[in-house]
Length: 123
View (cartoon, rainbow, N blue to C red):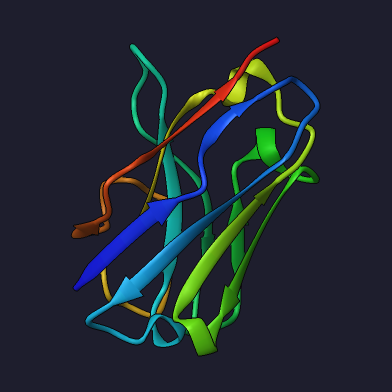
């Protein structure tokens, strides 16, 4: 099981980025996959999560209405579209799964993590 997150970068406040999480060794559409982030000096938190068991989607309150999680099953990839970015969104972003159908966004659950991608929002 491998996950590779990419698409981070430097963006100005109000800008947009799309993160991609390429999965290999498992079929992502059958499992919950989530995006998590960790800012310097802060605990890791769940940003968004998409479940396969019931189709539910979780968003951190602070990103609701700005971020959208989606899948491309043909590419075995999960995306995180991030709009109206603010400096508070600056963090290393990770994708992860615990290979179950449901994904809650709790960072304590996933067993498999990809290397993070840095998102920096700054003017």
